[in-house]
Length: 131
Ligand code: SF4
Image (tube, rainbow, N blue to C red; front, top):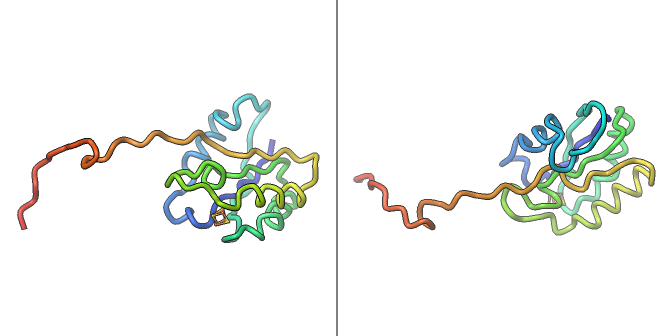
C-alpha cells in the first residue's frame, strides 16, 4: 500500500515525523494488520490553520501515487505536545471529500508516547551550576 502522510504544520518544527515513519516501517499502531508492503510516497502538511489546504494536498498525494492517506498523530492525537488540532474533525471531512469514499484514510499514525516526568516534577534535586 502506498501512503501519503499529512501532518500538522504547527508542529513540523518540533517533530521530524520519526514515530510516524517508524510506525509505518514496522507496521504497528495505525498500520498494524496492513497486508503487503507499505511505501511512503510523500509527506506534506495541512497547509496551516485552519487546514483548508488539506483536501488539495490529499488529492495531490493521490496524483503522486498514494493509495491511502494517513493523518499524522500530531493532528488527531496531539503528539508531541499534547495538543490535538482543534480543526481535526473538519480537516478529516475535507480530506474525505477530496479523495472520495474508496480511499482508505488512517486517522492517526502512532500511539501517544508516555512522557517521562521532568526533573522538577519528580522532585529531583540535582547539582546546581554556580554562576
Ligand atoms: S489546522 Fe490543525 S493540523 Fe493544521 S496547522 Fe493548524 S493545528 Fe496543525
